[in-house]
Figure 1 (cartoon, rainbow, N blue to C red):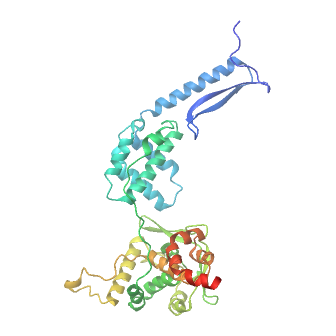
Figure 2 (cartoon, rainbow, N blue to C red):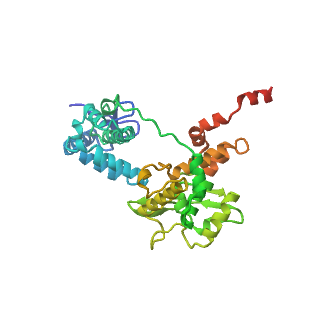
Length: 375
């Protein structure tokens, strides 16, 4: 009589481990535990059924194309991300990785990935986003047992990438600061640019402000929400960009004569669109372009003079540059104000402030003076 394939264990049932088609983080085969309380033969039936199901799954997905899988990945794993993050992944999948759409996922090779990067070499930031997206898709396919664990290294490693240099963060120039204050603007534009300048908020935080967020007696403004754009339509997100984003920002004395009359004359949101409670994305772009034009006129630019139509003295100025200017000026006040307090006012972590503005802190340090004082 043949002996049973599986033996009873000390807990009174039959047990074995079967490879489930996936791999551990170390590359070893991941095995699933199967048990039976009936008999060795019953456990063997479960083992064979498990293997058959595994084969059926493999056959059904062996012909899935990269395009089919990448869109499935988008829907499954990226729906909960911020809208801007979703757009970045979708653009990479729909536009930059589209040449791979018709290739079976199991046939994707290192050379396919490198070819995609090569065709976008002139855009280092785009290549960085493509690599991030593509690598996540491959890792997901490994988790789904479509690709072996070795695919992560075989396909995504040692890719020749263009050098990406982060844009230099800068403060406002003396000309920009002067023209921001001297430019002729209507009350809404003046209030918006003043909030950026005097409070250092993010664009979306400023656009989400209401009358009730201001306390002119305490001289503070409360940041607790943000506007994001879904296409052209504005949406209120009831929490800021980061966990540190909810904060009270002091209102400088110079800002109050500008902001108080405008804010107290508003109902609801401060920055409304045409017959809408909030500015649309296109409405915001028109407002910002008008602000920049007004600043250029204050700098002596004549928009209707043919000879200098393309010679605007103020260019490439974004709302975020006002934020960097705010933080830069605060950093120059160290040690009167601490980096921890600066981070709190910016809605960032102290680590972020130290990383981004370390060059300003270095410039501000007077090593010789410190040594002489200490010794």
